[in-house]
Image 1 (cartoon, rainbow, N blue to C red):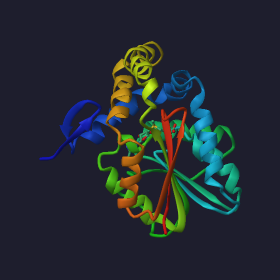
Image 2: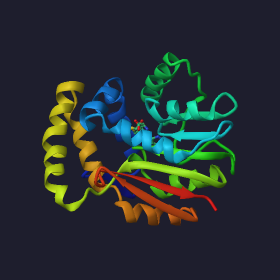
Image 3: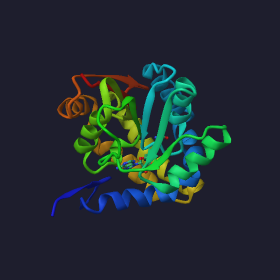
Image 4: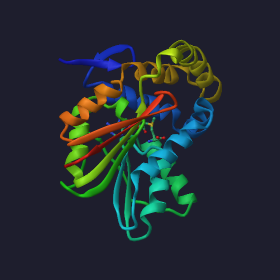
Length: 243
Ligand SMILES: C[S@@+](CC[C@H](N)C(=O)[O-])C[C@H]1O[C@@H](n2cnc3c(N)ncnc32)[C@H](O)[C@@H]1O
């Protein structure tokens, strides 16, 4: 039996996905409003930057992994136009259906699929761009998921990983106070769930920092990997090119 972490807890690795599912089942309905509140709207700026770096063209094929309520899928669909395709995927049905309803309200009927990033149901060398925003942190075997992302990309294709990362040292104390004191209270008040937001703060601390994630992406097969820190490293955008 192998164990892994779920936030600061140690769990059997066969159970982690179930624990993560519990978190997102619980928060799906309030996910968007909580995102705006917790980040004071900054997640919109991080995602807008990701969309710029994606440099999509009309006709491109895109896979949005852990797409949740669909922010990136929506932005990408506008870039690839009617000749391109954005596949909106997530392992969690509650998150995916909340996202699908939002996309339909915007007049966007994208292919939507429940799938696990560790076993992608797509052929090799298929997509121009694969994205995963705030999802990799929750995956049990990040190495396996990153290899799958590399496999489904066309040679020359790009992976974008937008994720919480290691904040700059001078901000650490304030960030810890905000994460461990304010976030769970906010979660309790708005979503009626303090534990899921405590998990959020803990899972960020357990996630590989900027350089470690770069190394993981290289080991998964990406020939060129780089990252940009956003908001003093609260978040980093990693880019991997399949060579
Ligand atoms: C914090 S949400 C991010 C949603 C969206 N990408 C965004 O940026 O707003 C994380 C998402 O990762 C999904 N997720 C967790 N493990 C996954 C896996 N193994 N495969 C695919 N999605 C997964 C969760 O279901 C959840 O919807």
